[in-house]
Amino acid sequence: MDELSRRKMLMITGGALGALGMTTPAQAQSHWTWPASGSVAGAGAGADPRWVWDEEADPLLASILDRGDVPRVNTLLRTWTRNDQPLPAGLPEDLRAFMERARQLPAWADRAKLDRVGDFIKAKGTYLILVYGLGGGMMSTAIPAEARAVYHSKGGADMKDRIAKTTKFGVDAHALNAYQPDGDAIVSSVKTRLVHAAVRHLLPQSPHWPHTGGQIPISQNDMLVTWHTLPTLVMRKLTDWRVRVSAAESAAYLHLWQVNAHMLGIRDEYVPATWEAAYAQSAQVLDPVLAPTPEGISLADTLLDMASEATGPGQPVTRALLNSLTRYLLGDRVSDWIEIPREPVWDPLVHNGLPLWVRVREGFITWPLAPPISWTLDELIRKLMLFYLGEAKPISIEIPDTNRPG
Image 1 (cartoon, rainbow, N blue to C red):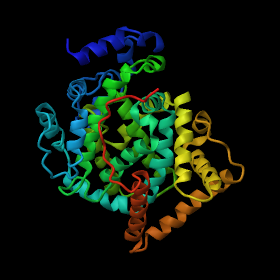
Image 2 (image 1 turned 180 degrees about the vertical axis):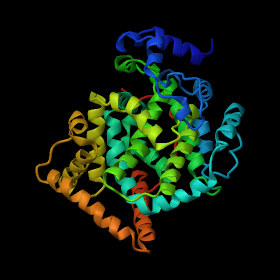
Image 3 (image 1 turned 45 degrees about the horizontal axis):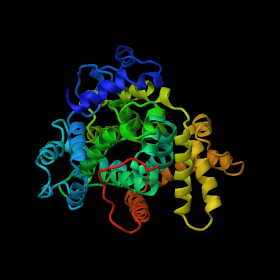
């Protein structure tokens, strides 16, 4: 039995059972009813994604960690920054072979759609920044599995660095040349996949992890949950706000996130083929798991403090506004779970003012020069975010070799 299989068997039969209410694999299987016919693969084995991880990357990263190769690998991979670059010389051969496979786009990737999504990003970039950051980013703190994994991993001890790396992936994946030869999305995706595999090996070794339930983190189900806090949440909000999105833009945006999912290691049989399939899957995997945790409450407070501090003077005012924007995007139930304070002044202003802002902005977007102007401003925001988070230094997504200290 290999190490990955051994860890899975220990997780299924060992101490995690008590914390998970004595869940058995048979019970877990009955949880999953989303049909693989609704996926980009069109078919699948039907395995419950809660019990599926990354069978190719996980044993590889476990071996690299156990061999002590992580520092050397990180040093080499800092020089790999563009999709068309060859992998650095000196990488372990097993890692090089995996990365050469992992960097290939799926056969079903549609270059025309990946090019077309730029028009959507140009026009809707401001909404994406808002919903990704204060919507999906804050919702993640109300997802127990994700909040605990982030808090207890190495990134939880330095959230600015953790958010910097997450932001880099998002910026690279939404660049107009994201999956072109001179883009960076493939690089960031493959590096993130390596990070996830390392965390799966490391976190079960943390003395704090058994108290959180003990399950191996970042399962395929966990990744799907996170996926739905991003594109699915965006499309729901754009629909709620009655933002104009053409059928071609909608299809292109979905396709971008289908490719992102594949490149991060999500099996094609779990990747929704349509928005209708995405909404159905989200209702099964995301909606029921939202809940408060001490780790999530702490992370939410840290994230909002970081965002307000980034603005400089007037931090109390900014924090209050961010609280209200978060509450508007997530609703009262989730906001109360992660202890977002109610703001008597800002809450009604945001509740009434944000829809008005959307209507005004949508009227502006019909002007011929509006999309490029909007894109320029959004791109400036993204660059400033990376500048602040990276403390004016290049941001490199790197493999962790420890958990959160203490």
